[in-house]
Image 1: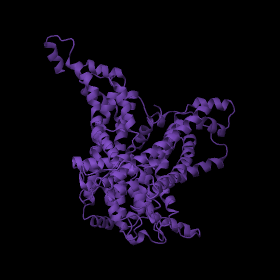
Image 2: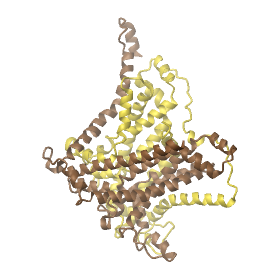
Image 3: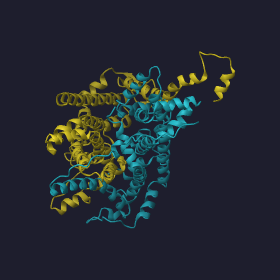
Length: 315
Length: 305
């Protein structure tokens, strides 16, 4: 307002006024923090990481003491000697073990809550959402105790019904299931919330029209709910894929840095972490992180393709 | 300034929209089965929380007793003392470290993201579409790809390694927050309101503080909780940025240290469980206070755009 007063007394300059100047400038100033931060903590690091992917470098040797190796890092990762493929296989396997049940449970659960639990909807979704906000380290420790071989609650319950103890965290074939169960537990509620909000966005009119036409509950679910929920399913699947491919904390805490016995729970993210921060091989680790990025990208594209193809036919 | 009191349009249509009652299933058995299904899901969600509180109150030798103890014991104080010993007296300091980082992350994120969201929602300016598109594009970068280069920037260029700054500065203005804010402001604030404030002589920043901020409290609460929880739970970041001294650690790191791996049967489980509880309590409190808000706010912009 002071500016106004000042401007009023100054000679008329129709082409420039402070009010208009700051109005023009404001959006750039307001949005600039993101771009400044991204430059320093995003774009530059990304470029540096790409640069390193083609070099051999130990960060203790200091800046500049890197050796150009071309595609060697990538070749090493994709070659037969390294654990890259093994870790990727574990990652995808644990991802499928936790991801598929997540959606198979979350979708019907959301449907039931939406359809039949009107009064309890808020409370139930809050309870189901709780695991999502929990600290992964804390909850993984709790699950680790449940899995304890001789003294854990799970084996105690199995014993009560006459089944022998399962070595949840010791047998390489079982470990992926044990880890996947924690991931499943943490993210079911999140997916329920997504599906619930998708269901609530579907107009009642569609269902009423179908009722008039004599559609059964099952038909309504199959021919109305599922197709109209497709965008939300696509979104939820994408989040699951992107998240599961970067799985780190649960297997890291539950089985230790090396992925437990036989390295059965060594995920790609853990392998990259170990290569970078334990072995200090930054170039190689960078190359692998870009390969993993590529894998995530390809899987997302496959997901995208499947959804867009089916969507075109049904709707 | 003479702004008319403005009713914020209800955004969380998902939670409260009136729906005509549905016909219930005809079979009572079917209905019971549905309740059982939902009941089991809720039970499974809650049981680990219950167990962690029970275990934190039991002496270490009873935590793994056969048959298991499933009710609270009286060793909570003892376990608390053990936790303090196991962390060389630093447990509460570590709680403070986590809190300090999370509060700073939340405050800065709310400020910068709402400011940028306001600009993208309410201004027309050259390059707007391109800039916003660019921000959305950055969301496609998996966080994992940033781990190594961020460490190197902190380590070799900024020399910030081992300091709390490494954890809250890079995320102050993030794509997700800006997107969420823009979506909300576009749907909740009419442009005429901004024009009116401008005619009243408000500066652009004044419009933000006096008009926009008071009207976007619900979404600020959502983003605030999400940011706080995310920051509080940031384990990998703290691990990479080497907040590894007893006095600089955040709680999740300390938790891993005193456990020594989840399969270590010799760990002091009473102390560990007490720290698990210490780690989880702020999350439970903040979430139970704002859960409705968070849930509806998080999903409001998910697919509709």
